[in-house]
Length: 391
Image (cartoon, rainbow, N blue to C red):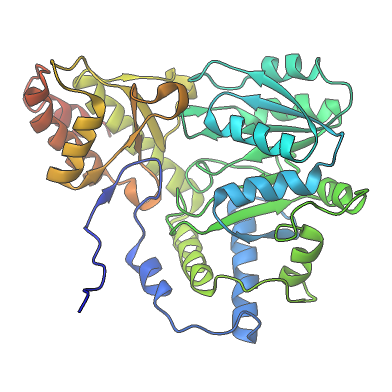
């Protein structure tokens, strides 16, 4: 007889997923009920309410798309864009590039503004990009670029977008629940995220929120949304008061998300943000003591996703071999680079449940054991001591 799959126990310190709290994992094992059961509809209302608190918005149309964060990206863009529309897309990493791909699949004109990988999007960049547009319908950007670790100042950029009259679409897949996201305060019209990063829920749902201007644009469309599955004119009737059947929602994933959001509420957003900040600073101190160099300047570094160049390695060594050894011997996962950074950097996540001081120290202790074998000269214990000194 075949044996059931038994996954190894890992410490997830990559770009996602993050570790899930035992309460979230327990929620996944609860009995199934129907997706139109009154009890499940009540849970949907709870999820909406708690997501509004995390997004910091009063938007009524705030819910979890049945799909990963990329489905949230696509839901925002395919509903807002039609053939011939102009979309300004700020590209400073892999996920800005993906936005561009979806824009073009909508038949819209993508006006891309490329920024060197590792640098944040700044207000002046958006001003320049808008100068190449005639009548932009949207400006789209990534708040926390997972491929580089760059944190763009959306709050400073928002007034630039507002003056243009365009709708503001923001990717908060990596930032939501780990750093401030102010949908209403920053006048974001459509925003999406994912469950598997700082919310520490398994991957499979994409929190989204749409403001009044975005909904007005959707209702003024000249043609049907190209995606039946992601068509908000139908989905909002399922998540709204009408409860019109659209698709079979992932019941267990919504159980898990509801529990993850309860944990966020119990900790408090400000306390959660501070935890991510402190642990990031401890990791910075420890990694720099080991000879790692950060890709992003200090003022624009993410707390939850740390992109670093490795110290010079000995002959026959490379970053992929070190990552594999870290996984095999210490059961710690970190991520490699994407796109322009493939084979050049590590991406170390400190997201949600994974953002713990003990996890920072465990990683540094493992690196102190591994790096000398890879030809890196170290002062024993210096990295752990540097991290412990960060209060």
